[in-house]
Length: 271
Length: 137
Image (tube, rainbow over all chains, first blue to last red; front, side, top):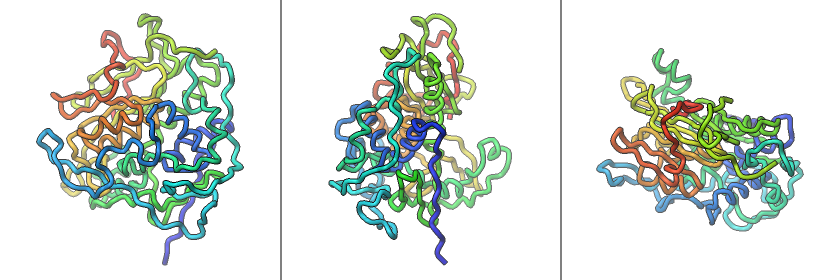
């Protein structure tokens, strides 16, 4: 019996702008070629990473099978890391479909037209003294996104698979299927058996419907991006609602904007 | 109105992986995301495990890093970079973080703490309590 593919929706918040913001980083992290391209382009500009193709930012030497090496401090580490490889096209997926695998072609592909609403344009002026946030300050990139001819950078790809959201079942097997506090209080229930993460090659994104379809047996672990993304969204919302600044911590992942210390004096604010 | 961010920034504490009640550093952020990961260990069937896994093998990572903090434009980017840096190990983490415009603080041991990229530019004086001390895992 073949397990069915599972589909779930990327969280969509009520406001159109936030919906785009919410889906953008997740899809971009996974590898969408749809509207999330606007976020990708924005980040590429912001961070000035130059060549922002699929392999941009990858450490030198990655792309070959893992091997052992010395880190220069007398320890043995594995390097370089593996290079994600394209997986088979999902059944029914045809070139030009709005859906895309997480490992799109690196050469020019078919031009796609998206009907998804573009991210809400940022206001020309705001009531905050903070600089506009990255995720809402890219109005010029949204128009170019639908006709982009190069594959977008993806976190899974540009980290050479080091960031891999399909690590869910592996991390459960390691015993991390509950909070740290519960792990410390009770004996972990994981099998303890190491199991490799399958990778993102077979995952299909539909930027129009904002859905993610996982191949059978592949789990999605939002733990490597979820809290950070939530912190970004909360800060963006606070600024949109008129806050002069905000600082949000979600347990190890935080976002600050509009910080003001009056030249280093005065009491710090707490958001 | 939009414009230059005000001087100073939000003071955010970075937890010390070896002394839970102490801070390793305090950074001042104006419009940045920050994420910290550190190793928290347990055992399964007598075998030591932790939650930072090598995706290739599923084994708990042992690359010589005990804690990684990344400052980036967005918190989600910072979070991704901390995980990738952990997997990459200390010799490659700096390049990986810098390639995405981030800055990192790599803790290899209590005696060896390395600031990657422009992280030193974010250091703030330790003379006052930080706004947040949440960046501890």
